[in-house]
Image (cartoon, rainbow, N blue to C red; front, side, top):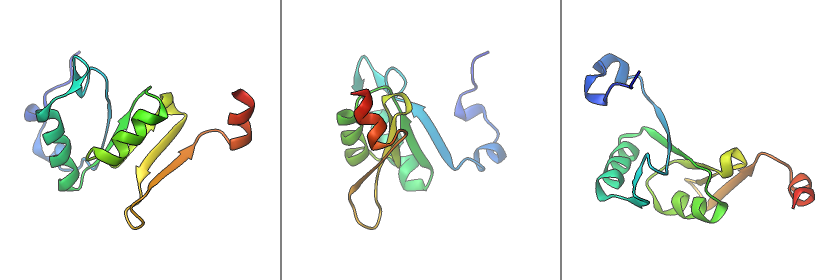
Length: 108
């Protein structure tokens, strides 16, 4: 069963949406690139107050860039190992890891 396009979802259902979580590779990107249209729609969602969270298997360096530079509210990276977001008041990147620092060090 294919999901319905947004244009076919009843307005009362869409009006209750406050957060969108989305994959990045081959979902937001096309052939490995973020198109201008995809960025525009991310920005429109962001400015409308709908929280947008990217979920990706990409490493921390990519997630850092996306969290800082893309119009999103956060990024879950390395398949759930951490999440990053730009702090609204202090305007700096914030990160929370699933595992403690000691556990991460032990697994290196």
